[in-house]
Image (cartoon, rainbow, N blue to C red; front, side):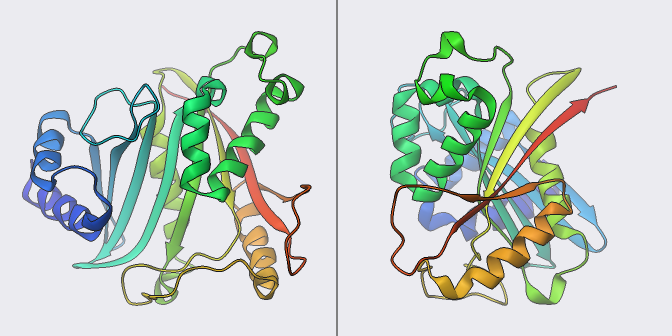
Length: 256
């Protein structure tokens, strides 16, 4: 592994060490053998993208590195020298996994946002067939799904195309075909609280009506990336009357 790749992959894994379910040294060894990472330099910044296993095929939480998980966790960090100034995280799986109750249950336990993103993409692709959980009635094309859990760019580095490039790296990394692929993505428009870098905050996010202007602003921004913003209508009551905002995109890729 090249020195620069080794340096920034090591920095990235150390950044999320508290959430790793497997040994750091084992992960580094696996990446050296498998090459499951991408390092790019752009406009004086270093982008480091890599994947972690989220679920084993039986739906259990992964406790070791596996080659064929039901769901991959795709992460990217952007560094200005040795400081994280942006990050993105998405859960990647095949559309067929939407009909795997164990996978769906694990996503639901991980967060309410992931649950709703899975529901949104399921209804986008399969309509009533998904609602009834009848895969034999469903649209047959197998596509790649991305359920984004967070995306943040430090305030001093915004308006430089960083978010767009991070999303592009994630989508290119998950393509499962050599000639043509379809990727369906969903992201919540709630504000992200930075866990790293110069804007780091210690507080946890509490859903609130006061963030409604930020959700609307995020909707305008994400639409520039080809997403369609939507307000989710549910039977669940939100105490202060705020709305559940998400954005979806279906993207086709041709590889030559």
